[in-house]
Length: 233
Image (tube, rainbow, N blue to C red):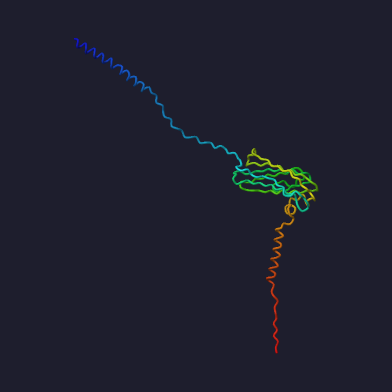
């Protein structure tokens, strides 16, 4: 009888010892069952970068200058001012220049790209210079009367169409008119563009032509015939 009691008590103790382990195993299984699996998100392709528009600008500052060449007007020459524009080849943008010339009454301004025949007021011209090029505009000034006059030059230049990046140029220069121009309303420059009435090049060419004609004439001229007379005895 005692042996049976001992067996029963042993079984009960064994059950008591096993139950906590089974409960822990059941909790672990439940926890594993309740774990939420987060899906892996594949990285998306990078978005295409939107190009930022570039601002038109000069890498190297261009040269835009007004230079008086001749400030005396008479019958053989005009007043002459040069507009010099240089856009270095390092730039990728076109140089645009807008120049105005303010003249008093009786003064006429002529030049490539400028308005012709302005007796008074202001004439203007717009010019473009691509990268790596140089442009020179000769501005001829004629007068209807003698005296001393002042001519005002003003202008702006900028890269391409970016007018907000403009730069200014200006020049005020006096002119002395000793004699009225032969034909102030004629756009054609007086003499040789207001510099020399007869260029030295034409003189040299004329001299060479005369020398060539003289040499050719000497070469083709035949020597006189000499007659030999034989006297008979």
